[in-house]
Length: 390
Image (cartoon, rainbow, N blue to C red; front, top):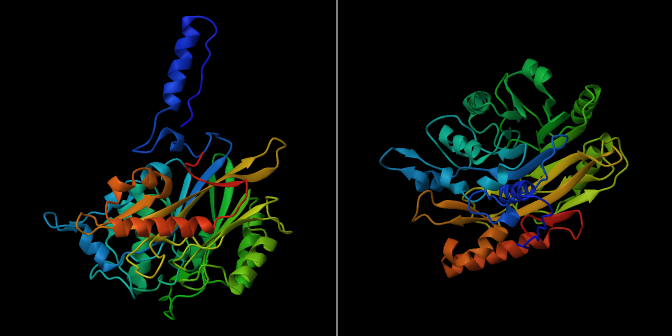
């Protein structure tokens, strides 16, 4: 971290004020260094975001996190190193790709996790769950009701699935307000593994006619920005396919300002797009795939994840813009000898403490490979930089 020289002109009161101010600015969350301690400049007229990918619970995760004395799994420590980063932002979004259908708990192909799994994700800092994905229908009505009831009781924003058509009509698009911004969130999936939603429950699918109507409904409420969390693409592919590109073009033309992709379980590139359309921003953000948040998947680079941070703010001329775009490449470190067995390790912080945090040579090599691969997909764009690289 670069040291700042402070020149104090005047009396002791002014000097004391400046020293106290400096000490406040130097406070750091958790184990992060001071240079990593703030992503966003605090501004009550702006709204800040972190968004990440697929949160799944496979049974090896459940077993590794189990506290045999209490008889329940404890997942909180999975997120120790990303928790201080997450809590910087106003809105923290995750694709919740399991159900809370109760026991018998299960992983792939039909997920059901205990509520303590979701509790830990909320305590890690996430306050917005998107539910429309290909596992939404895994456990029928119990899965739908479990997810919706949990989110309601936890007091977090959520969208993508609904108890019935009346609820969807009333609550979708989700309109929410933060720091004076009126925002709309859309969420849809390409499919649900050929399992239909049980009547009367509803999951949003990628239907361009329906999405066009939803966008029009959001615009009619005079929102400042429209965001779309979309479950699309082909699994284990490192680049977006033509289907994703066509849908993204459609969304941008119709007025979506930020597109947040999930499903491939692999990190895909991000980009700023200057596209003709009716969006609120001149340049808009497309995240093709955020990769996995946490899982036990074993295919190459499914242990790689991405968090994207950005700010919606008014420019000096009053025009809104997407600014302060940061990315955190992270690695899912698996060490089942120590509960909870799975740890999310952010790039730069882990590199600075590699021997301590990831002691095994093979795991270190995997971590280095993941970082290299994820960073290679990030654009050379002065508006986009890695968190903590300042």
